[in-house]
Image 1: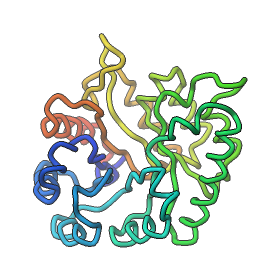
Image 2: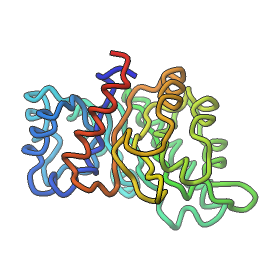
Image 3: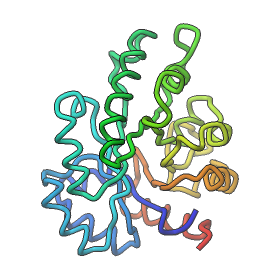
Image 4: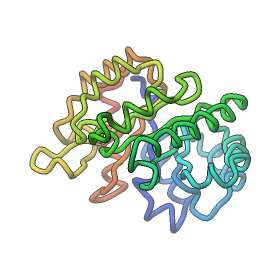
Length: 251
């Protein structure tokens, strides 16, 4: 991992971006972030935000785009990606009704393949971001295994959330080794030793970062994206994660 591959998922600072997206981007740049991953645009359009991003020297590593946005108007999603200069479009979560049974998962996989093809034609990588429920047994398989089998690896990539994979009982290191050519991005947050449902800044918990980051490097991961679902102090937590990751980076 190199320092310029580190990004921040803006969901971590969602309370701040909801009030002042441009001001929050400025504060993140002051902390030292040079890339972000969007999860909504804080009431602005991507075209409105592009001058702020360019002026701050912030790249867009990716954008989380809700499932229903893909269903409703995928052309608008692609237009937003072009406006941001973003080459990674990510479905952040599966709707609950599409993870109830194997047939639902097949519908989900078919849609992912279709949207992945649209992205591929635009030079954009389509990815799916996991939580823990993908690893729960379902009809003799899991949602994760079924998606891996039924999606085209050339069209559907993965944003592997290492914390959620670990929490769900999977082995994120083994997943990186097995699926490295499909994993374009990884999410980084740490696991509290006393409460594995809590998340902490990277380097402040018990996730085995040296091993995981080395394996991710070997797998050819493009982006290392800091995220916390429940930060204690959002700006201080993302500052801590960045400082710890900079110490782990190769340069």
